[in-house]
Length: 124
Image 1 (cartoon, helix red, strand yellow):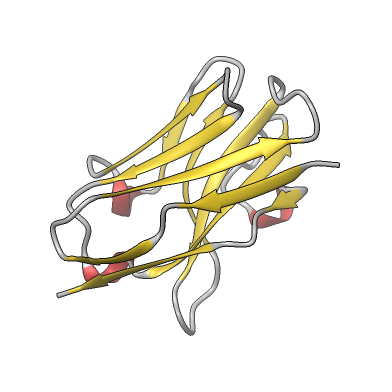
Image 2 (image 1 turned 120 degrees about the vertical axis):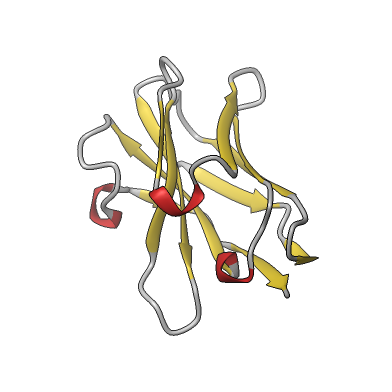
């Protein structure tokens, strides 16, 4: 059974950095897309970034381009989200997700497995 466990959230000030980790287990992920989504209070869950495990191709939502970087460590089966220049509007619960293939990677409906989420709070 696939398990995704996030860590690394916390309370920071605007302009600070955080690195989120998602430890994945339960199958071989080389045909999967791994992604980060977030849900701010009172809003829908939204796509943040994704990475194709096989070749490392990355995708970002416009709001985080140039500030966030998604990466993976094959040996550790772990996906990271490096978040720099954080803004108060980045405050949300961040979720790691996994899907087979890369089709419609921005859609929550495509993902089969989700982590429990980790809170990121950015104060102004």
